[in-house]
Length: 604
Image 1: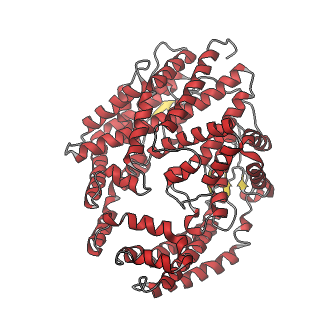
Image 2: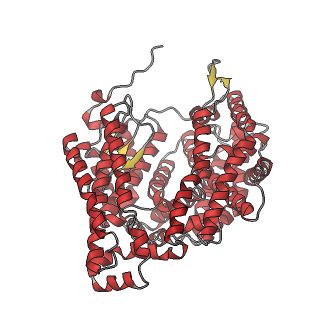
């Protein structure tokens, strides 16, 4: 059979491409801004050593910084998005490289500002804020900087730490090169009977195969390879943990966990509450595992059986036009204003829809302050991609609301809240689809999809978070993180999280060795907290209507003008309490109950 030929970029219909001209009409206009930025960044040197002279001078310096960073963002985004349209295009490879280089120069040009501001005598900035009302817009920025002053060292020590910081990237770089460039997995016999190499990209596809032999062989092939390097990988991970513990201690934090969370002003109790709340609901996870075994008709469930859908998709083809209608129908509870913005995004070419030769894979929302957001898709006509559309438009409208309501310095939102709006959209859509579907098989498929979001995001990411807390804690206590110790911890967590209704294969004890996020410590918990907040918010929107929507939109408008926890409180969710996580897990329990009722239906 002939291979499917991807269309070229030139063959794509205009209506299916994003309106890149809303950023720059053409490359020449981009060149003009590039040169302008290159020339104007020299202005920053005029403020060096003088930031404490007066409120007016500090305001001028901050405004200049904002103007340059806004321009740099626009230059960078245009070059990046043009490259993502076709990564083989050498013209945009060059533009993108030039834009990245210019961003580095701008970063270097303004690097003196925060250390210089922190070195000012106590009360200087507060007095400036009283003297000049225009400077008040930067209060949150200054307060967050000063808040962390006790963890900033003197100039020479900071200089030394900056040099050490480059070395500290070593474990992450080594793991990345090993995992992505050097590691090769064996071949297995694929579904078609042909030898097929296991790769990172194919692994999940193998685990979703209806052929259990394929799932099992892929599982053993992957972990057999990691097992061969278990001691090397333990040494790399141990080095990563050691440097995090070292930096936290030097900066006078109580722990590496406290240091990581302080960047977004998150108390350690939020992390602990997440783990405690999930532990309380582990019996529901165990019940889900037992139900999975029943649906798959297995006498014994294994770890390689966790990703195959319990219910097969009906294979229905969903056009992009229909996908947009489904998203609009699902998000009706958000009200006319939100729906109007969605329609504007659909009709005004915010979205680059289909695959073409050389196009960047995956999906994302991106953009530059002062223009509408953009969404890159590689749309396939299935339900998963309908959810991707809802998800990315959630990001896009979060950006739109933030940009419209915040000055540049606060327009970008922090990672802790980044997945809330996108996941809330998905939750509203899945609720609508489940409630409007009478056919038992389709309803079961949709509930299975939603339950898997809980398993892979809330339960699994919390298990990851608990592993990180344990391993960093042991390092802080002086214990050596050997391969055997890491495997023992990880295997024990899997037994605890999945329960007695599954055979916890010994190979899973090596999963810690393949998780790239472990080299950005204490990051993954935010997927679980963000998911919990989104489920709690979607539940509130469905139950309370317009009042809840308006409070939710106040969160969307907040950008980073407040700390993440304060922004979520504006929407009615207090992540310092266990309740939002528990409320989300009660939704999991409700749908699990429904899935159990469907299990007895012979049409499923």
